[in-house]
Length: 304
Image (cartoon, rainbow, N blue to C red):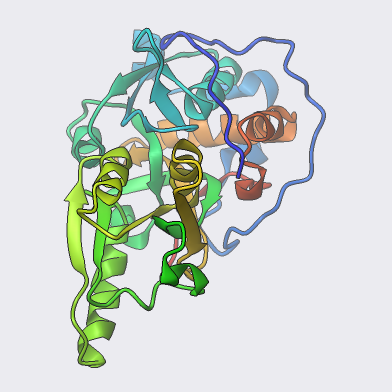
């Protein structure tokens, strides 16, 4: 999957040019349509969207967004320490529809949900997968369908496998707080049933650190999503390859506290507006993420 180096953007404010093309592109929808879909965008459009922004957010004039900027092309730090990538571009486009600025704040991945529930952030965007377990704490507005992959050294015998069912007894790196930890629990239960050795799990603060662990020989494999996997392959040309983990794709990415339903619905409506006018398709193509596109904004679309 080709991934694009993000444009430099101001962290605060609407940074998309009005010259973005608005030709609508076809999108692949893999989201479960049985998910909650009481979409305010079904009944609001144009200038009406600005009325959806909660009064407390409107009063302070900015939506604060928590993110772990280690997930290119979704978010990363540029040379000036600005947070750049698809998520800032997309949320700035949504902010333009809502007539509100956005401000991204750096955070560790495992601190994002606590930061939301404590009120430190108004919302979050950090390549976080929408799962039923996470929905118990937070709400999601989904705009991307992600797949899981296993990253390994080129020539590894696992490269001929078609899923992640062959990892018993192997050393595997994951990022702390990600859904890969849940997946390994399932796999280890299968290993136990088969009277096989459990997976030797190594937790890392970032997928980049996990990649270094594999390069150094500390671990044999990394479990992550397809975008991170593509980045690892690109950054280590000729050294790494990936295979799919065999698990159906899951939606992601915008996250809100359960008490922030007004803001959630406003952003969902703004997302649908940029889907409808073609801005979303343009950005997804610009960052090489067309395979993960959806054709409708959805709330809490993640399922087991």
